[in-house]
Image (cartoon, rainbow, N blue to C red; front, side):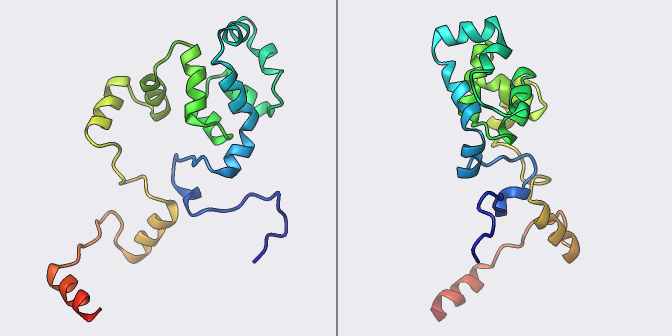
Length: 163
């Protein structure tokens, strides 16, 4: 079915994953000017101009007011929600003298040490971070919080013999 309003946002399966901002084509278009601002910080003269007067420097980029506020407040998660690319927004963090690990810790509400330990241990658990719709399905079926059962080897073998 064709979209009636091409400017309307398209719904994606991944839209309901808590705390996840997938940088897709729509986010790229939404955050284009925010990301171009961040990329401008690769040049020393631009970093100096930005640090001298952040609001004035931002006025060179046709961003939304929400994007400007997110930058000025260094609200990293909001920047991503508004179309920022994590690798581009890291340029702003570097301009402020912060490592990527620092930014990730701030974005996840943890300390740098706790964030590093979590990542070294294999990352965040998927429990509590599944899509909202999958959690609702699990709750309806009475299987909330239970891991899926694995198929037995004999069931797999019989299935493969049937073709």
